[in-house]
Length: 421
Image 1: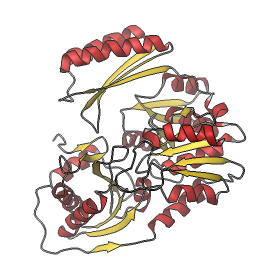
Image 2: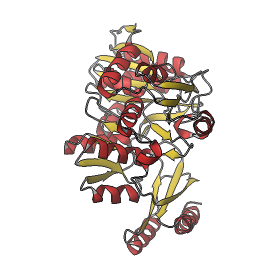
Image 3: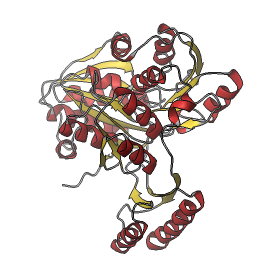
C-alpha cells in the first residue's frame, strides 16, 4: 500500500491545511494501537503550533489506551534516546514556522520503516477504545539527554571560541550549555524562540547570521543546528560554510573508520577522498533513515548527508546535531576548521528546486538523465529526484568545472519544466 501521509521523514505539512489537529490526533491513536497500547514518549520543537498538536497527539494516544508521556521541548535525537515503547516528535525539522509534523522512533530509537508507516496509516480510521490511558508530564528529560551526550561525545574545549546558532529551536537552551560546560567560550545565537522565528534567517538552513558573526567576532568555529536538532552545519573563522560532506570527511579520518554511508547527494570529492584512504562508501537514497538502515545492515558506525545529518552510532541510536558538533570540535586536534576541511576536494554543485504538481518523474525524463550520466562517465553527474518533504522536484548537477555544472543544471531544469509543466 502506498503511503498517503508519510514522506521522507514522518508526516509533515502546513498547519491548518494539510496538517490539522484532527489528523495529528488520529496519528496518535493509530501509533498507540500499532504499538499495542504502550507508552509513547513525546517531544516537540518550539513552533507556536507545537503545544496544540502535542495535546492532540497525546489525546490520540490516550484514546487508544496508551500512556502518553510528555517531555516538552526537546531535540529530536533526545526523543530517540528516551523513546519508550514508541517515541514521537512534534516537529517539521528545518521547514519554516508555518509547518509542523510528526515523526516516530521505535523502542530502540530507530526510525520506522516504510512498512511500519504503512501499517500506522492503515489504522488511522480506527475509533477510540473504551479504556482510556493516562497522559503524564515529566521535566527531567533535557538534563538526562545532555548528560548522556556530554559523557559520550564531549572533550576539553578550553581555548576554543565557538558561536552556536540554535535556529530558535529545540537546542536554544541545551546547546550553549553543552559547549560552556566543556570549557569553550560561547557566543549563543538565535536562542530566543517565540513560536514564529524557528529557522527564520538562522540555523542550518540559513548560515548568513553565523557567517557574519564568525567574521566579526573572531571565533574559531561556528556551529548551526536546524529547528529540531538532528542536523548540524558549520562555518570556519572566515565565515565559509563547512557542509555535511566535509564534516563527515573530517570525522571519517579522525575516527579511522573502514566504512561510511552517504546518500546520492554526497559530493564526488568525498568519494574520491574515501577511495584514496581505502574507506568503503555505501550510497543510499536521500533521507537519514536510509543511512541508518544501511549502517545497521553493514555494522557501520558513521554516516550522514550533505545537508548536515551526521550519524555516529558509537554511543547513540540516530543522527544528533549536538553530538556531531562536539565530535567535530574534538577532531580538529589543534587545526583550524578551514585546515581540517581542506582535506576533501569539492566538485562544484549547482542545484535548482522546481515546483511540481506531481512527484512522478516521466519515463522519458528518467531515460534522458540516465543517458547523460552514462556519457559523463563519472567525471560529472546529474541527479533529479522528488522532494520527500515539499512539492518540489530537486535538480543537482555536479562537475569539477563550475561552468559545466551550471550548464548541466540549466539543461536538465529546462527539461523538467517542459515535461512537468
